[in-house]
Amino acid sequence: MLDYRIRTLDDADTPAADALFRGTLHHRPTSVEQLDDLKPSYAPGRALGAFDGDELAGTALSYPSALAVPGGATLRMAAVSRIGVRADHTRRGILTALQRHQFQDLVERGDVVATLRASEATIYGRFGYGVAERTRSITVDPLTARIRPDLAPVGRIRLVDDAEAKTLLPTLYERIGLHRPGMMARPAELWNIWWIRAAKVDGLSRTAVHTDAEGVADGFVTYRASKAAGFRAELTVDDLHGATPTAIRELWRFLLGVDLIAAIKAGSQPVDDSLEWLLVDRRAVRVDAVQDSTWLRLLDVPTALAARTYGDADSVVIELTDDLLPANAGRYRIGSDGARRTDDPAALSMGVAALGALYLGDVAPSTLAEAGLITTPGGPDPAALRRADRLFRTPVLPHCGSFF
Image (cartoon, rainbow, N blue to C red):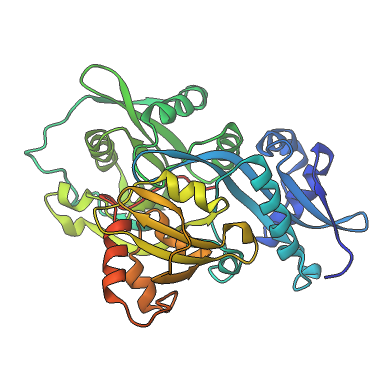
């Protein structure tokens, strides 16, 4: 790496930081008229820049958040975003330097985990991020998709305008709560980004809110419609959350009933979503893709392991390696009564990226062992892997539902 200097960015750096990051995605910079709206989306003190002299060459930032983990606890989380290196400064170690600097900063702040959404799947594993949650993208045919007749409508749906949505949705999302592993708190900075993004997209953007039988709001969906053919449009679901399965079902009932829609597209849906089981014709739903979503980096491994619950099985000792945060390295005994450091011999060995992939319960240890990402130092030990599978298994798969 050449002589690059890394420092915290301030408001005056926002235009350059925005132009650099959007340039890495091959987008135009934010217009001058919208820059004032953009600045609140930068969390104070959490944006970093790598400088070549006075010229910005790379950026990385994070938002203060919280992550729901198996068992119901929440951990302090850094939602990492806007990582980019200018095209004429790539392959010079800037990204590695930014990651090292950011990790140290986040640890000092007391963040226990970091998560991000990766533009490329080959980048972040070497920094200790593992794929901890996946989502599916679906297409629904509204002409054949109908909720089963034995599932009677509950509550009501109302459309709200943009002004009310900006006030209501953050409060409603907080009330819905982080009720399954992988869900994250949404800081104000992220809501600001989503409002800006919604204003830029093509098509009519709408928000619908569901209220239960007692008149209490318990779910919402934001969606947009863009012309397809003739009078019909394609409806894209951008954000859908409900406090209960009933609320989610009723939001889908509403979407399926919108007139003049040729197809409904929804990304960031749970892998274990029950939508097909709600329908008379399950083939009205087509799964277009299953893709990685949450990349998880454990920053404070002892605290993270102690925070989640484990299944009913005899304990297993793992040996962990972590080159970038060596304080995490060592042996941990994980059992149904929790996790703690130990000096006992390890049955399984893995890097911190593999442990991050296991942490929320999306993948089994035996699967990672088959892929060579977990090894058994004492020779083949299928019993240890079976115990680990039971310990890390969760009642439901993780799901976040928040793209940032």
